[in-house]
Every structure is written in structure tokens, then in C-alpha cells.
Length: 276
Image (cartoon, rainbow, N blue to C red):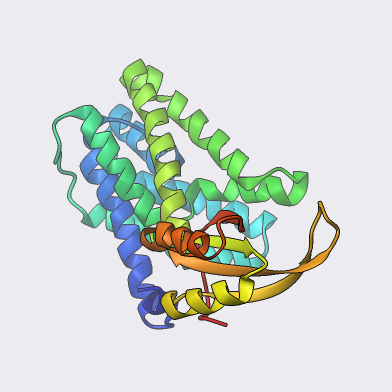
């Protein structure tokens, strides 16, 4: 899947699929329950509740305004990156039927947040964007040095606050809850679900451990020379990358050879290349 996402032809297919996930989350989970969880689509949901204007139409209007801001305040490469999504998402929102798939409001927001997070996460993996309110944070970063992630969150919270006069306090609470779920799920989507462990091993019997591990571990394996912070001596350290399921087996294997081996473990969310 990762290879097809980066393929020049299939990449556009995956971008459209990601945008469609966002459209489904809005039209089938957020909008039917009148919950605006930030962004241009959130503004569109609020406008639909107040004026009855279809979500896709308002989203297009907001995106056009954001594109105008990007034209004047951002570089052309950024404008090009958000251009496709800015037009395609409103089109998909217009084509995707607005159906209330889940009658329970809380469950609908939970499911919608997960679907939305997958859509946005896939867009980020392909360096694409749905446009909209992602533009102001980039402007604030360029001219004021503010972090885009913080400004995007602030923008989403401000939009979510308008749930209170339009749909009530409960809608606002659900919107904030949706933002939290989306952030958590996006973290997994962006870093990948195929998580591994990076294990660093130091031992007087490192050669034996290395040979045993090489026979049983198909992932990254390398030895490097390091200077110990405590002893200030130069020693060899073995780094091994293993699947979560094989982590305990690796630790038991090392301890069987050297019960006093020094082992440091860290999460490895993205690994490239093979064994060394």
C-alpha cells in the first residue's frame, strides 16, 4: 500500500479515496447530528444548520477564500499542494449522500472521528491536503513563527465554540471529543500500525548474541561503537529492530546468553531498509 501511495498514477487515486473518507465522515456522521468539529467542513455544518445551505457549497466557498489567502501570503508550492483537495472535497461532499447511519449521537461522533482521521492521515502521508482552515496556520507560521499544529487546533476549537449558539453545549462537547479522537487516531495512521521495537544491547558476549539474533531476527541488525556515559569507555552496541510479537522472545534470548546484559528498548514507528 505504501508503494502505491507514492506511485505517480496511483497517488491521485489514493488522494481521492482519502478525501472521500472525509466526505463520508462529514455527511454520514457529523452533519446528521449537527456537530461541527472544526475546519471548513465544520463551518459548513454550522451554516447548514442555520441557513440550510448544503455542506459542499459552503465548504467550496470557504476553500476559495483560503486559496485566495494562500495566493497572497504563501508560496506557490504550498498553493499547488492544497489546490486539488480544495476543489475535490467540496465536489465529493456534494456527491456523497447525507445519511444518518448511526442514530446514537455519541457513537456517530466516535465512528466519524475515526473515519475522518484515516482520511486526513492518508492525505498527510501523500503530502496532500484538503485545503480549508489548514491555510491560516501556515500563514501564522510564515510571518509570526507560530507552530501550525497549535494554530490549527486553536482554529478548530474556535469553530467548535460556535456549536453552542447553533446546536447547544452538548454539540460543542462532542466536537471537542471528536478533535481528541481524531488526533489520537491520526498519530497511529501517520506513524503506521506496523509498530516495532528498537532494542539496543551491550554485553561482553555481544558476538554470540549477535550471531544468535541474526539467525532469528529478519529485521534491522547493526553494531556500532559508542562511548559509555558512565564508564567513558568505547564499547560495541548491537541494535535490533523486532516485531512487537517477537520482542519478549528477543529479551529471553539475550538473557539466556548473558543475564546481566544492558538492554535499552524504544518504540520504532517507521523502519526503512533491511538487515545490515
